[in-house]
Length: 576
Image 1 (cartoon, rainbow, N blue to C red):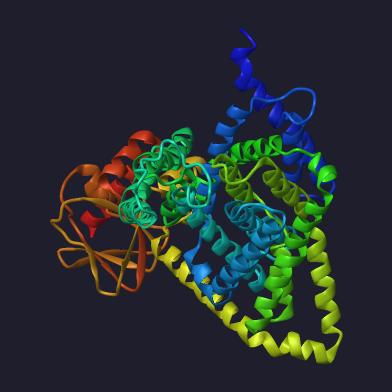
Image 2 (cartoon, rainbow, N blue to C red):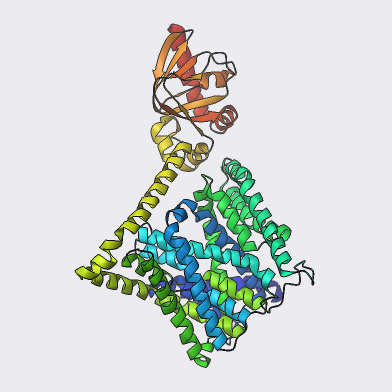
């Protein structure tokens, strides 16, 4: 095997090996592992002597990483949580992006850059990393607090703004002074407004198809795959949906890979299997995400820290001071407590994945030169390393204000009404989500074994597959669930309430939680011989006939158990 044959293997092996080593070192130094991944990319990049990984291969692997990261963002995207913090997150994020972009653009114009380069540069510095923020909040046990949810909502709005930017940027490239993609099918004399209109129509068409047909097809398909019990098929289905939809979106609608993957995640977010999809795709998402950060580091030239220290200092001033000050002022002006303002300010004092994506596009379109991209990378590396200190400083300042009664009344206690509204909205959103989940939930595998000893002998994996076959059903007191003479179509497991079984008007018995009915006709193939009526408000898990017989074929010991119970019930009915 020649050296050329192992280029991909060498690139992936060396990149992941160094990323692991430096990521582990960064973690031990209480820094985000992302810093280690970027450093690994610098070491295998062409800017330093020694081994240089294949940049083109790393770039394509990084594109997969972007798609999987955006798929993960879509899977975890909560419209309800965003709406709960909308009063602050939407105007705050929009205002902060505009002001930070304006400052960044003004800074680059003073350096003699073009307007297009300045806009890309300013936008890249205006958006913070959701990945870095989530890790910071998790480390501080603040992810579920009102301030933590506000900060996450703020960054989600920024992410959505960047998604829109990624959609519109190819259309505006030539206007901004860049070089349009040669594959873009746009007539040379086509007006900007017409080009924008065509782009928006294509994007809107994709969004409509994704949101209208996607929820009807993808969750159903994922559920059918899950019901096979094959873990590898389920993982393959998740990846095929994420990458396949992204590819189709880019090929047919001219939408970026990232946007297509984001909407694939959003569609599956509504499925009860979204958590399982996220769990199964996480290892590959993490691995390709690491390759994305390594490929970004490969483009970084460390010498810029020595060549342009004043520019690097200006970039750091904008990220650490400028953005934070703008966010602090916006939150205070909107009437929220200082503790909320400090949390948001610290959250924004860093840049990450979207900055890299946008900067890389600017570099590819000729809007940004390598020096500008290196400044973005330098800003990311340094700001991510310093970000924990911003949170510590925010905590100290918040505690200091609380010790000053006058300041505390003015900036904390006197502003709790606004934060209380946000907390109430978050609680309402969570309660609604809980009710929705309860309405569609049957059992967890553990609950199934605890409630129905019949299934206790199955392994957790087998019970997990069985749970996917159940459909929830409810009944009110007096409601007839099964009628004598009906075709046998399902097995009913009682999870709550009580039912009465009657034959020709004679009461045979009653059954409650942990028991089941409807199995006799399913086993014999005859029509229903009894009526079953709910005695109070009842909940059932229903297994349809086809799945019932399929499951019994797979587990004959359970078939024998159910057949024995059915025979005993037949004897009781005959004796009664």
